[in-house]
Amino acid sequence: MRGKQVLLTGGTGGLGLGVTPTVVACGAQVTVPYRSESGVARLKERMSAADFDRIRFVKANLNDESVVEKLVNDLGRVDVLIHLIGGFSMGRTDEFSFDDWKASFDLNLNTTFLVCKHCLKAMRRHGYGRIVTIGSRGAVQPGAQLAAYCASKAGVVALTQAIAQETKEMDITANVVLPSVIDTPANREAMGEAQASQWVKAESLAQTICFLASDAAKDIRGAAVPVYGAI
Ligand SMILES: NC(=O)c1ccc[n+]([C@@H]2O[C@H](COP(=O)([O-])OP(=O)(O)OC[C@H]3O[C@@H](n4cnc5c(N)ncnc54)[C@H](OP(=O)(O)O)[C@@H]3O)[C@@H](O)[C@H]2O)c1
Image (spheres, rainbow, N blue to C red):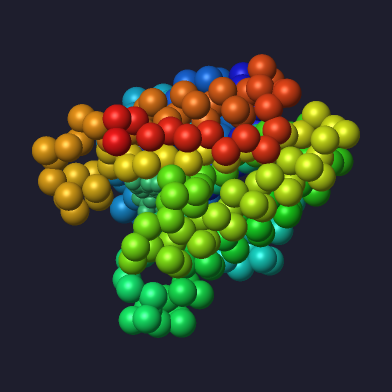
């Protein structure tokens, strides 16, 4: 990814703590949209000042299409999109509010659609692109109390695979990774640390993501890659 223009959404989140330093270390020019300053400050603590200063941060809520369009247009060229934005929700279906259902689709699927849509326009103009999205094991193995999360992540898989079909004639690929549980500060806080050694390290998932985002992965299209660790 040396010299590539990378749009890395969710780069200040728990998974981003592993992915963002790895992408910067590849020599890419990295833009990270963010909403909360605290996420940026946490990432800064984990990186050398020189590497951190190479990241371009843009405050942007990516649920808003005009914001996404401006972000991508300002970049001009997007060689690689790594879209980490997403989040978890739980609750029995008969007790789940419609507002929470829609919020899960906004967070997981609708941001993915908006960012992919506008990055694809830029990628088609330049005839090159790598898209990596984040599904979840739940997208292919749905669990109880996880309908909104699993359904919205299944949508991310379908969207990514549809894009892979649409871009076959160009050097543009789209693939999705399916993590189980990632070793993030939030998961350690929510579930304790007893099982953490079995979870997927963010730095390890970053390696899979960076391979799919590289020139070398040009023949991999529409893959849904399980990254389950030891769970
Ligand atoms: N953690 C796990 O065990 C696990 C397992 C399977 C799949 N995944 C998936 O992996 C991805 C990363 O998970 P994570 O644990 O890193 O989540 P996270 O810590 O909650 O981070 C989410 C990131 O997305 C950003 N974000 C959310 N909504 C946004 C919006 N509308 N506009 C701009 N930025 C927005 C957040 O920025 P702000 O904080 O600034 O809002 C944050 O940087 C997600 O797609 C998640 O579903 C996670």
